[in-house]
Length: 69
Image: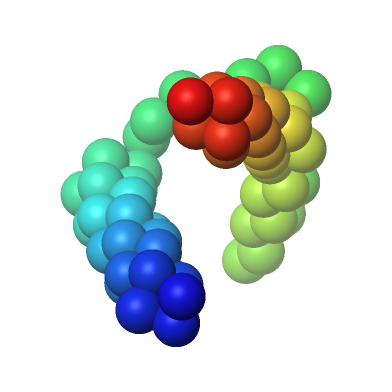
């Protein structure tokens, strides 16, 4: 039981590291409409509301599908 949880956590960390590398290599990836971008002279704030909702839906779908199998 504990080993399976550890394996899931390690896989999650590896996925986040991979996504971090991809996003740092390609900073001009397109964003969805509905993502907030606030630009000032020396300040930039990005809040990806719709992107987070889409990623959450994909992860929920994958978890639901794997639970059904």
